Image (cartoon, rainbow, N blue to C red; front, side, top):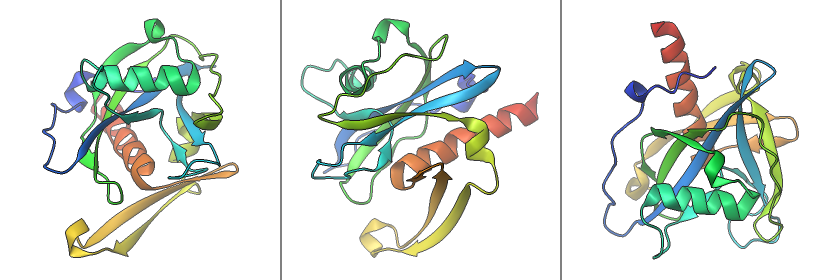
Length: 190
């Protein structure tokens, strides 16, 4: 199983000025002896990031007690996840996205078995269940160095995962890369 022990998870970050706080749920489970992660393909009719692969998540709303509550609420709305079935492990490094200037706080959580999820067609085209082995296959990922405006940090390494029928990139790929790095580090430390 994935090593998600707290020693690999970070402390909360502060919200930089001008950034909108948001949260995503990195949901892991074991199926047939292998670790899997839940992703979504965003609905094609959306104005922003239409058809892109992402984690369930979104911006914090006034009624959310904290960003963990945001991640759970969004996963419940987008894919019908039962929040009572989720065990929180911790969170990965927060970061600010290039395009929307959102502070993204990725929360790692597990469920005991493969969840039965139903996409809300208003936001989600499809739920993707992806084995971590597919993401770590050397043939499925690559990195490119992009030159960005200095306001966005100048050069930035962009990660891409080529899944069966989908390309994962941007913030979602960055979170997956961090998760996989920590998973590999955890396995090596044992």
